[in-house]
Structure formats: structure tokens, C-alpha cells
Image (cartoon, rainbow, N blue to C red; front, top):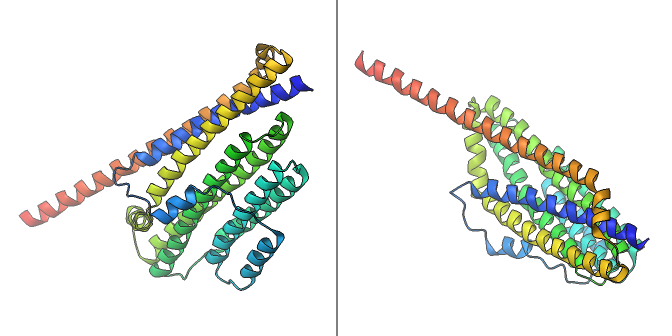
Length: 320
């Protein structure tokens, strides 16, 4: 049993290395924008949330009652993300009290809340006008900020639990749940991006805009909410917390090996296939990013060529 636990911990170790690599790429992409502004202190405080308060069933109940009197899809999603935060705190407190069942129940509730947030995002759809489309983008950008902050909270939960006095077996079980929470929350950003892309098409239609003009309008809205800066901050925080988690797991593996005298190389051999799968997944994500960058550069070149053509036509008209 102890040997199986060490194998599980080493699998988590490999996954942590993979996560750090992916998050480093996210931070690099976010940093590429030279116009990054400072994030407001309120958002910084949310990103650095320590999840160190107590949460009761009454707190959860009051938060749910608040949703009954909220009618905007955007506001409901924001409140549900705050409710999801309370469930993360409940999961943390339960895990630290060795109540695995209560921890799993809280994280299951968290998953259901995130699913509802996804439905809220899909339901946001303003009037079929230029202002209506821009208003929808503004709401979605605000929600992405909130989702980014929530991702930092999940990373914090992993850091806290990996540094606690939990058994190796408990950590393996908890990390599986956290992986699911991370994946579900990250998917919200994909849903939000797809929704904005649809609204961009609407903006082009109702305002008679080119694709580039619609993208510029959306970028202005993102800049007004410092979205790039928030992405960069959260990516850096997630990396720091993942590295701390990695450090904690390494310490636990070392202690378990000393205790049982198990040769780590034998466990590593059994994880070769897992490692190859993780490397393939990492390469897939990198290729996606490279494809996105190539497409972006291609669009920029086309835009520049189009502008040059317009300038040449204007010059010919001036001459004639």
C-alpha cells in the first residue's frame, strides 16, 4: 500500500511539473503585451485570498438566498463564483480536519456551481445593436476577471492542503478532485472566449465593421478593465503556488521513501507511460499557442497590407 501511495505521489509530482510548465507559458503570453497596466488593489487582494475564514451552512444558505433576488445573468454568475469560493473554504476546512467525505461533498457542490456559471455565460446576449453587443462584451470581460481570480483560489487550496498534516493517500485523493475543479474552471474561459467571438460577429453585422475594427472595439473594453494585467498577475500567482505544491510533494515523497526504504527509481519506471502522456499533452498545448500566434501575426500582416493599399489609393486620388 505504501509503495502504491508513493507511486501516486510521484504521478502528482509529474503532473505538477507539467502544470508549472503550462502556467509559465500563460504568464509569458500575458507578459508579451507591453501596455500592461497595474491591477487595482481590490483585485490583487482577491487574487491573494488566503481562504482562511470559517464557513457555515448558514453562510452557504444566505449566499444562495441572495441569488434568488438577483436577475441579471452576469450578476448571478458573479455571485455564484463567490459561492464557489465558500465551497472551496469548506473543502479546505474539512480536509484539514480529516473529514474526506465532507471535503468531497464541498468540491462536488463547487463543480455544480461552476456548471451553472457556464450556463450564465451562454445566456448573456444583449440587444442586436452596436451598444448592445459592446455591453455584452463588457459583462463577459468582467466575468473573465472573476474566473481568473477563482483559478488563483483553487491553486491556493492545493498549496494549503499539500502543506498540511495530511496522509499521502488523502493528498492523492484531494488532488484528483482539485484537478477536476481546475479543468472545469479553465473551461469557463473557453466558453467565455467562444461567446465573445460570436458577439464579435454580431458587432461586425450591426455596426458594419470589419473584423479588425470589431476586434479593436473588444480590445478597448478589455483594456478598460485591465484584463491583460489580471491574466498576467493570476498566471504568476498560479506558478508560484504550483511550485510550492511541487516542493511540498517532493518533501512528502522523500519522507515516505526514508520511512519504507523504497527505491524511487522503480516507481519512476512505472510512471514512464504517464510521463509520456503528459509530455504529449504539453506539446499539444504549446502547438495550439504557436498556431494562435501564427494566426495573429498573419492577421496583423494582412491588416498592414490593407492599410498600405488604402494609403496608395488615397495618394493616387490626390494626384488625379
